[in-house]
Image 1 (cartoon, rainbow, N blue to C red):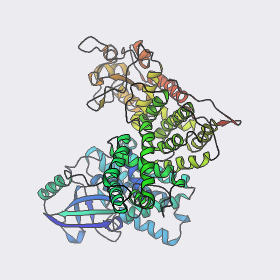
Image 2: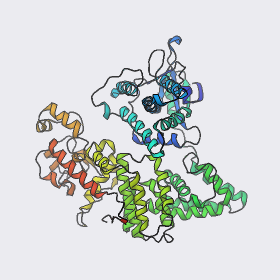
Image 3: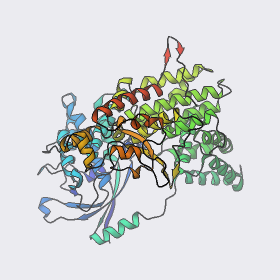
Image 4: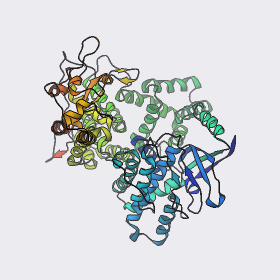
Length: 606
């Protein structure tokens, strides 16, 4: 079944001297990775403690003429190989722009990188995607834009498809890395270049397609491996028994007390262990070569800490986990306080990276002379920060840990309400400008970040609710939101005749749809919106469910009050509503800072 299975660094798989080509077979799905996966890959490479493991690929040798080089069909692993080469293309483009300032050795590296992406002998790309979804056209166009010797072809809406977006994301991420670390763009690109080329992939080569599919199914249905959290627990139990500090039952109770506070989500548990070390690092024993806890060094850090003072660390983790569980809204409270509601908003806006700061503030609450209202104001400030950050992408993900650790350091002798101003100043200094935030709000927000779009629209709707009209817009059924984003002008192809006629004909309608469908003004919130689909505007407005209840725009949300008064929906309507909603979002999620020595008043309505 398996012809060979070996571990290779990327620079070997894509050797500039080799003749190997990796081709994606036509039966594979089109490129499907999203921004979250691009961010994870970039962050993992930057944070790697050594060579980062990129996973496994399964290939089938399809070589027919050895003189023309090896052709390996990629049965599994096309997403990571395609993404990896797009990242390397972004590195190449940045270095190519500064080629005149590079020394001879680095210029040689750039030349070799180009040959790792495009074979020197015949100009073929090392990785060839299939044509579905215009993947191949977009991929070649990206390589051409990067400055590689490939002839691409621009297809309509190329910039809005995933391959082009992935390439632009990595280019932007490299430039942001340079800005964040205060280094030259070439230095940032070379840092990413080195991390990517030394990353490791296990290449499994099989004999036949049938073998490939059997192996693929086996690999994707294997049992879950032990996680870092499991290994840290095992080390705690083993060290307790070995050093006779606690018996195994006592140590296990400590561990279970911690997990009870954190819930059963592994990601939350692992993130807590990282955040605890990063928050209280100055008070913990020094762990060599661990200035920041990352996924790759987490086990080593806790092995070291538990060996130094197991009982103290175990007790501290239990105490901190209770705070962290409240911040992370692990337990749904019958009567949440306004602070708990602030934590819930922060959770919903995906503000978890800031928990490192909030956990520290709450643990030091008495010492820092903070009351719950002070912490609530800071949580609301962080919510505004993450609305902006998650939409603009700035500061980048990998910079967030450092940001909140330096915020802890900056507080120093600050006390009481002064701490709000210190945190506000740190956040404002690294955030995108109001102009950039507004530009993103006016653009294709649904395409840029669906979660931010839903959060902003939902909060605007909740602001206008009374006790009598309150609706739970976060309610879920079968792990899906009941209330979801609805595109007023439908986003799907084949617009119904009513929409085509309303917008001025087929050609105009297609242009309006492509330009405006994902803009803020064309989005709203409705329940069970699969019942609305491609219906006409009036049908969507007046839609009732089987019991005669309004599920269209007459659903009682203030967000839809204007829509109820209209009989048509045009590009002018979308533009006007986009401008209005963008202004409301900016007002709703301000990012204040110290003004003339005084802290700007900042409170959410609860």
